[in-house]
Image: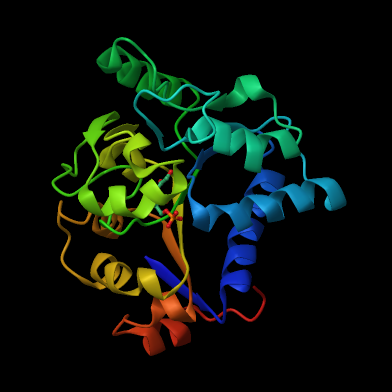
Length: 256
Ligand code: F6R
């Protein structure tokens, strides 16, 4: 694991976008794993800017999102498909046929989850997986007790996740209680991973995930097993990392 602490949310967000852009430039056929949520909005805005102003080319890129709400169609403004179209896909030159999310409306959820795993495998696996961390310690919708061997499947959302995301729905009771998510093992198989966490609200759970024991109760802690995982945080999110001064010395790279 590598922990990079940036002074504020904007520089942490821009560094994350820059790492993605570098990978897209190096490999125009990159298979990119994506996340949704408030944290990612700035990353996608910056990638869209790089596309418009610097010609960053997404025409050969394939994407796989981590998760989707069960029961929400793509046309629902609260669905993650809608979010992705809105924040990124409609703003860059990606072929929509190359963008993948689990289908939250599938009648056979088990078959849909197997199909999603196969689709990832048939693209050769995920080259770079973008991640956020939720209040429950989840990555994707891998809620407490998610097996570290888990694959794409349906999950009942944790109370912390309902509390975190229900304000984004027209009324809190409209938030689905289940989601479809890549599993922890699916995420660990990505060749590279980048987790972005910003703001003081993430400080406690981030410290548990990075410095605490690996536990299925905090699925982000499984990233300690990832071969190549970079954690990018602002000062506020880094505030409870016991080793933050050491990480600064180890990973401070003035070029970034
Ligand atoms: C969503 C996802 C989640 C979010 C996490 C943080 O696709 O993967 O793990 O990254 O819930 O959400 P925000 O950024 O809204 O705090």
